[in-house]
Image (cartoon, rainbow, N blue to C red):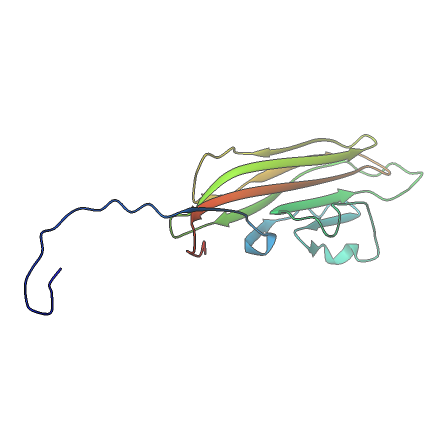
Length: 160
């Protein structure tokens, strides 16, 4: 540092560690790469398959705070509908020394629908592209899931 009088001070290294901040990454900051479309009702992070507009199924509560979510199912029918084994894919990225810190994943399965799983796992990364796999078999089968991703970084610094 140089004073107004022109004198120079000695240099001393200073370790600066900002206060940490923790947040939930909102769904609005997640890119939907792929949402399965083979059942009667398919929706991912607010996107609804255009040919499913007249359908309705139970899904995540509308006021739920989540990072990524999906809902898929077949409607009521006395006839067997074809099964579907599909995946939904999302991408999320944080910047400015923020990291994806934690994940909480919940799923709901009705009737003979099965196998809702996600991957790959992550540990303190800046970019993650989860793939959620599911299998829906026949009439009245539905699944929905919600992933909540916690992020951490320096307080007062934007994560995007």
